[in-house]
Image (cartoon, rainbow, N blue to C red; front, side, top):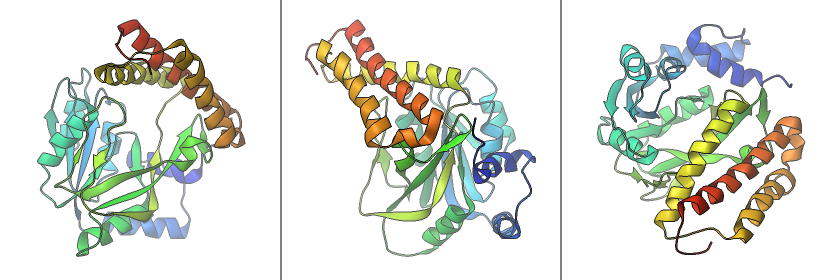
Length: 287
């Protein structure tokens, strides 16, 4: 297995105190983040059973003036750990991720909000850029940036993960859609772009990936069913096949080695499961 990118390793180890030695430039960048006064931005983290990483996630946001954890009804120690780490915690059992984000945004005391997950870290370049954005007047009301995704010990630089870009910094008057899957920010105004990145470890291992696929496939089927749709045999065959061809060949996922192949296969399986679940639930219109 390929070794993870050192920058990604440092992003996830710094909060727990086991970071690898940094060069002088990286040390200076981290020192400036730690030494400065908090940046007037509110970070909102939606959670559900994230006890394994919520403490580190909050500590990694020590540069932010306010951290709000919007919990979806965790049955582990997520809430207690988040409170102990100094975050403001609210609980919304049964809410969608978009609903959790919106509830946290409602409580933001700062004009700028950073939407971030427990398995994501902000790199030093992006921290500096966020500091500049919140001090500026005028300009876009929302900003997007790229995500650097690590999968099975390797940063995926190709395939759909290699082109991952999301709008996550925005003014507090904006809200997310509340669909079960792929909630999106409904941007008011213009959107800018920043050079920094979010470091993301979406899955601990293949078992964790498979478990998430099951959950999101069910949610995706629920969204389709709410639109009155049902699958056809054609959809069950062609949509997973197209997903693999797109991710592995068109988006060049093959360039990420074994990890790229596994990611493409599981992405295809996720598409199949979504329509299989939809078939199991029933519906009224073919898709």
